[in-house]
Image (cartoon, rainbow over all chains, first blue to last red; front, side, top):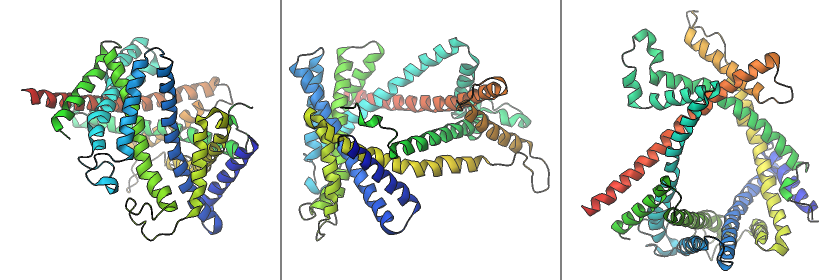
Amino acid sequence: MRRKIPLIITFIIGVVLVTGYFVTRGPFNTLYESFSDYFAIITVFAFILGGGSLLKIHLKRVSNRSTDWPYSVVTLAGFLVTLVIGLFKVGNPDGMGGEILAAGSWLRFLFDGVYNPLSATMFSLLAFFVASASYRAFRARTKEATILLSAAMVILLGRTPVGAWLTAWMPEILGFLELPNLANWIMAWPNTAGQRAIMIGIALGVIATSLRIILGIERNYLGRRE
Amino acid sequence: MDVTLQLWIDAALTLMILSFLYRDNPFYKFAEHLFVGVSAAYLMAIGFWDHLVPNLLGKLFPSLMSGVVPGAVGRSPDYYYIIPAVFGLLLLTRLVDRWAWLSRWALAFIVGGSAGFNLPRFLDSDFIIQVQSTMVPLVVLDPAGNLLWGASFSHIVLVLGVICGLVYFFFSVEHKGILGHVSRAGIWVLMVTFGAAFGYTVMARISLLTGRMEALGAWLATMF
């Protein structure tokens, strides 16, 4: 029962959704729409599960006084304060009926003052690390690394005014070699070719995996056999 | 709330994260852990109000949600929505070791749903349409019948690029001889694609960094 019922559920949902995509009449169409709604709702519960899991892990770390446990207190405090403000719309000028991120609300304050700067700065750190990564790639001196970095440099320069300024002296007949034109050409043709190859490869993989999941051949998501 | 207070918090957290450039330190760890907690709760709250309230609670208890969900007044409850509610609650049993196996039922719904949605969608947009878009003439002529060298060259690059890239991903045969050369060319095409993606990523991150520097500038301006 612990493994068979999930396999039956997966089969029914998968078959209904695949059929509903092609058959746009009768019960399949209705079921397709209902299952789409149900799917979106259940996925939101995954966020709640994530929050619950975060609470469980950090409470354990605090109670066991594990290494760096004071930082877990910071995580828990940030989590609980934001959650209470968000779920009960604390400090929302329009009350429970207002927009969750209404101007002047406390959640908006947390979003603009804490969440936004933290996420933006965290991701902007990558600007420094990609610089060192490119340096290491240049040192590797392989043909592939050179192609990658040359394409990156052309795109970077071609998309900024410096690129246009650097190659503005070129005669009209060599206009296609101007960095903005070269960047546009790379984006439109070789880049599209590579992306298309990747997309087709991914699509074939997804189709095969989806079929294996629906037919119950792929069962890794059920975890270990108990 | 006070804008100046927001600027000070914004600047303090920005500096804490940037301190990682020197080395890992308690300020960075503080900001990192705060980010984890705040972002998890923020996404939960948004998910609750944007999806659960209108799509589940508003359907099951319309009269109770009339002040919160627009259009819920006078609507009769749709009891079919008990199904996702039950599956959603089953998903949460993963937090209780004894009942964790029940969460597989909900997981099966999610996995089956993803497979059911993805199979036709990928078949249509990422396979058929991509293959169709690659079927372009290799020799491009203008209306007068003259050969357009640039367009023809671009089309050849596109078709050969896709074929070479696909050959690289074809692992059923060993990449030796002609297949090895074609696969090698496929790697070069993929490297150009990764290079373009790399270039765009660098630009996006630098633009984020510029935004942060502007925020720090605005904070400094409040002091002078």
